Image (tube, rainbow, N blue to C red; front, top):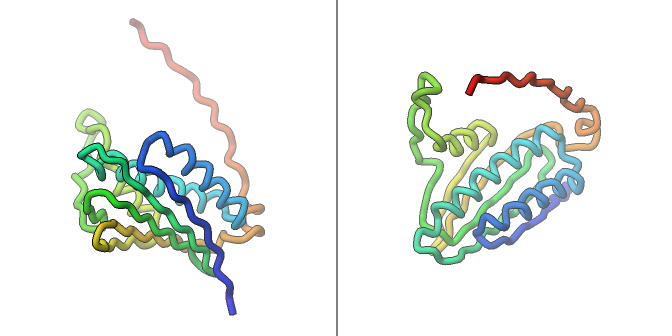
Length: 165
């Protein structure tokens, strides 16, 4: 019988709590021997989604709660985000079309698109008073062998350019 590994984070829906989320994700990598690329995908998705909950889920200024549950299964990672904010289903959200140039690009509005790209599955449900968003990440690199075998990225040197004032 396969055993499942779990972890959980309960946090106040406040931007001041985002460093706790970042620290928790870093702990997941060590605790569950996750590959760097999988941790990057998880971190990006959780940061985007939790930030959206904080910014848009509580328009009346009330303090809310976000609970994140991590479940490691043999071939996938399942993460459920539950919040008591305004009902919102990111799986049915239709993002604006991407601009054809940087001049036409607006700030923001790409987070859900990124989450859809980096998570293998995304499912939403709503209980009486909570959003429940489930993310699934399939990755063969969830063991120590692949995490250790993945090379560190090479540093990139960027030469600054000076513009006349």
